Amino acid sequence: MKKLGSILTHRVALTGIAILLQLGVLAVAMTMFSQYFIPLYWCATLLSLAAVLWIVSSSTTNSGYKIAWIILILSLPVLGGVLYLLSRGNRFTPSMRRRLQRMEHSMEEALKEDCCWETVAARSGVAAGAQARYLERYAHCPAYSDSKVTYYPVGDACFQPMLEALRSAEKYIFIEYFIIQPGEFWGAVLDILKEKAVAGVDVRVIYDDIGCVFTLPSHYDKELERFGIKCRNFNRFVPVVSSLMNNRDHRKIMAVDGKVVFTGGVNLADEYINRKERFGHWKDSAIRIEGPAAWSMSVMFLTMWAFTTGKQERIQEFKPQDVAVFPETGWVQPYTDCPWDDEPVGETVYLNLFNRAKRYIYITTPYLIIDEVMNTALVNAAKAGVDVRIITPHIPDKKTVFQMTRAHYEPLIRGGVRIYEYTPGFVHGKNVAVDDRWGTVGSVNLDYRSLFLHFENGALLMDDPAVLDIKKDFLETLEQCREWTLEDCRNVPWPQRLVRSILRIFSPLL
Image (tube, rainbow, N blue to C red; front, side):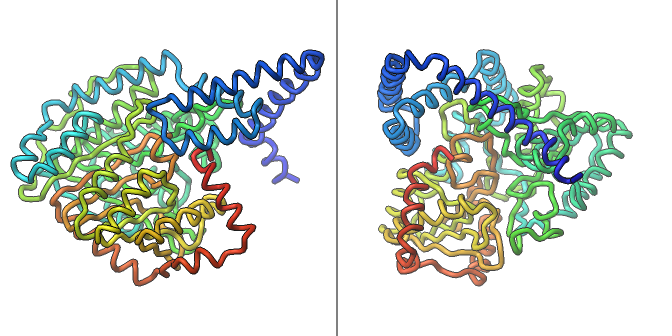
């Protein structure tokens, strides 16, 4: 009985009740004005047609997203059109637009002196320079040639290095994660954060409110502040129907003094370091960046902090002066992606890597829910003789998303791409290695949410030794995988194939 009471009073349940009440009020209103049903129906139909025309004419919206909305609107001309107009109407507010503009301006001002794409082009070739220029221009993120990258093939391996880095903090610790959950991992981190806060270190934490909706209490930020830890929860979960709830902070950043930073797929919860088993063995990855490039991710955090507080930060005051440099290490270019600027940075980084491949493309991703552009890029590479291989999970964390992932197998395999499932459990790493020369590690999944709806981050590697470590990890992981074939795709009962087809159409909206 006590457990039932806690479920009913959980904020998700309360929010669900609030949303149902909103829908109930709408239904009552429709009943009260039933005598006007015919004119209201035609008005809604005209709105739906206007929505379809708007979708077709939009030059920035992803084509898969367009198709899903058009089919929904044509299938349910009243409800579909109204839902689309509502979702577009509350997507952005003037206040948020101003905050976003300040966020972008702050990034640009803090890092513009580090921009060096011409140097990248001179040292590493035109292709590397073009990639560096894109990220400098559209994400305000420079490339660095004197920073060291350490790759961790599982979350377990980065646990102790993270704690050691936190213990070394003298000025500040910045932590920004999609999921935080009490347990051994977060407990060890929190103990250090408390000690450092008492010692006068500036400790700040950002967590995503929906990402932590089942792992943290509603006002956990207030609890951390009692320990002297500054905290913000991103985009608080509220009981209102709003498309803004789709835009989450999916980034993973742990920055110490602007000198060391960790990023990758690892969240601060025990399954990520295999202290708790949920879906078999959890195969994740992370990187540690030391040197001047670490400052770039500190700036990312500070601009997000300013966005959540609405207050400007004096960013240059946080820039370290005595930073170790690591010559002859290749290029590392940390980057971030914002869903509100109509520039799909995460997807473009991936596409640029795929289109430059000459020998191989090795991809690790927990979800494979891609649009036609990315599907075509991978298939064209495979048809040109590039060895394109993808590792996905065999044990799913979300059954519907798993079915959507498998729904994308057949056209890729038919085009020459080889797909493998990690049989011991769940793959959560988001890695790409290309031709022993290019690579990326970060928070960006190969799905619509990561590519178009979430705040994300990653690190592009060019001619850096860590690319070979990503490749080595991929090839070793293949030994624990089962290759999926066209026969496997086709030997599926027709009802399940039908469900997968429907899921694939509507995957941009799910």
